[in-house]
Amino acid sequence: MKLTAKGTGSTLSLAIGAVVSITDFATSTGTFTGGFTGGTTAGDTYTLFPPVGSYAWDLDAAATNLDLNTTGGEAVQIVGNDTVNDWIYFKFRLHQFGSYPKAM
Figure (cartoon, rainbow, N blue to C red):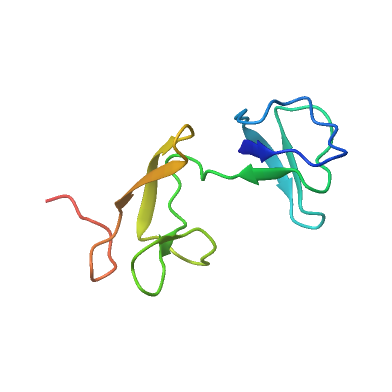
């Protein structure tokens, strides 16, 4: 994740633009654990990048944008992240019929 702004009362030790790894996420509280000190407070904002190699993603309904909030998606695999330009690189993992490529 990349810190994009700090709130007024932020206690984070990170500089804006710093990129740190997420090591865990608690769904029940919405809390990230990672390589930083200080807690996130109101107004702290981040850009999240999916892990390289992950493939739980799809395109949106218009097939114009990557949908990182989809459930059950597997057509798109993340192959890289550019944290300077905030880009996510991906490739299609499944073909139009939805089955995995098979070795010949």
